[in-house]
Image (cartoon, rainbow, N blue to C red):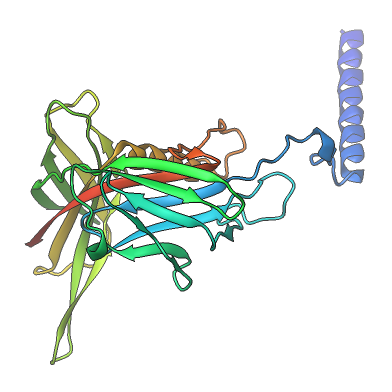
Length: 294
């Protein structure tokens, strides 16, 4: 018994000394967990044009933004916002298959833009954007504007410490449909001369929807609003019927923000429908709105 107890004591002492030795070694090396990597071992960075554009019959302008992508490895940058170099001298054209217009560069907005009244966006039509940079890079993308889907109903329910707003709509059967939903609660301000409504957004845990396995069904989205609400505060809901490009891009973007600080998250490329020497998204949506006073 004495031998066994002495052996256990020696083992404990050995383990303790070993742990102290490891801690002392790591504490002396500030870069124990971060080692410099030979730049020659890193994958070669390929510069591409980053494109972003969303068109809709409900938007007043057609806007396309262009910038150069930035490597994540080997640069000092803000991981949340990043650095980008806006491309100001490209030729950007949009076509509906019959007519084509050039989008001039807007130096104030830092994007290529044109008033929609000069080139109307129509539900059901397919549009193609063609981009040529001064360096000779060629990019193209296309999207079809989906038809709007009306909101069937908006419900308000008061909970213990928040309000629940449900937006309900009927999915069109026989086709793939994708949606984005939003809801707001209005605050009324009256200065004796004019009355102004300020809209406070209600939080949706899920705001992007697909009709996969729910074709033709009644779809529902539920949000939570923790702000102040008067008895006569107006409510507003918007339903965007979005194309597949918009949906997949924003689903990937949503995943990126969810796992941004998680070192164990699985890497995932963000969806792109840009063909040629570029990445990004060119998509479309149509919008319906429902207003009510509760």
